[in-house]
Picture 1 (cartoon, rainbow, N blue to C red):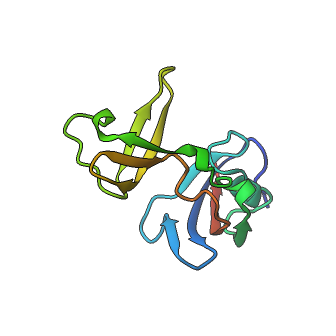
Picture 2 (cartoon, helix red, strand yellow):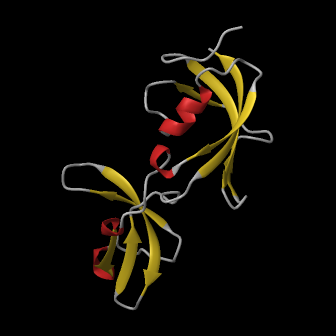
Length: 143
């Protein structure tokens, strides 16, 4: 039976959990499977590595360490900014996400983590940074 390898496009169903058991994402029940090409960097490295060698119909559960997931949290990616620099009319709330465009045109997401009357704390770390992740993966097909 065929096994997934570098360069293959695959379709998978998955459920992602923190090591505490808290689910953070799932393609089931009733969701569309995720399709990606192994080796293209479309998913985190540990997820790609887990799919390599799987055959269609096979399931596995893997724990992906921080360094193969979203990396460690970096405090230098947290900034306190004056409210005047937010988009006009913005009413930030803790947990809201915004897209920020840098001078060079790069776009990234930030999450509001704290508020005062004059400042907003923005965190550009991925929400899952600093966590080992547990994925249940089912390979549906190699396209």
